[in-house]
Length: 305
Image 1 (cartoon, rainbow, N blue to C red):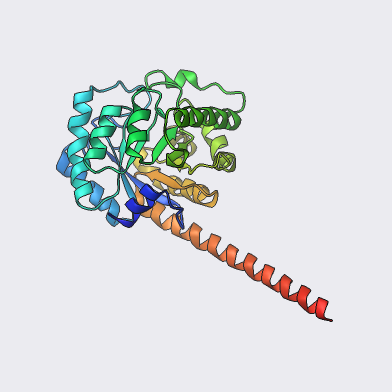
Image 2 (tube, rainbow, N blue to C red):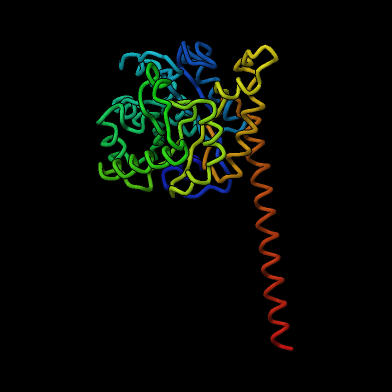
């Protein structure tokens, strides 16, 4: 078992923000659809992500881009299981990105060590039982509906407060269904029933989400709101492949806010970014400790005088 796998299974705290690399075994994902549809290509890509610094590799066989239709259970299993199995056999910490309990169960049997469900268990009532029985970490994303309808569900009074409340309700429901609280990781679901403005507000409000008391996973990588931010004079969003520098900037924001893990397509830049953020935070802690020690020494000296 790798160090990361042991950390995940024991839910041990991490010294820095983790980096989850994305392997979409799909023909229609918004960024890299079709690139890794062949299992051998997907495995090779996953291994490259690890070489670039990924702590985990997230394997998914169903696109959740806006407007995407669902694939059949059999097709999702066909796409995902060979890739999960080969990466796990190579010692990679594998997450399975699925909304289906049967896919999660089969992937865990093949060696996955985490379930990443963009519906937070809402899409399949059997998911909670599978996760509870397996005892693995479970990513609970904020979700209001499937990709085909989610853009019409982006209405909030206060997006940070509403997302926090809905995630808290979902956590309580999952604990009530038998999942240990220590297994749960939350994800604000950037881009899922969210406008660009909502995404920016959630990034600004990450402290409120970490205040839920559970680790936070953030997936901002290459998403529409970054493409719109970087649009040229004619207003055309930049292509997905030109959004990696902006993605790395969101990684710095996340790591500084104490986010547990970022999910990204381009691993190298984010792997470097989380290490820089960790070094700055470590220096800040050393300065604070030195200041506290100096204050204590001064107080002792004054008392002695």
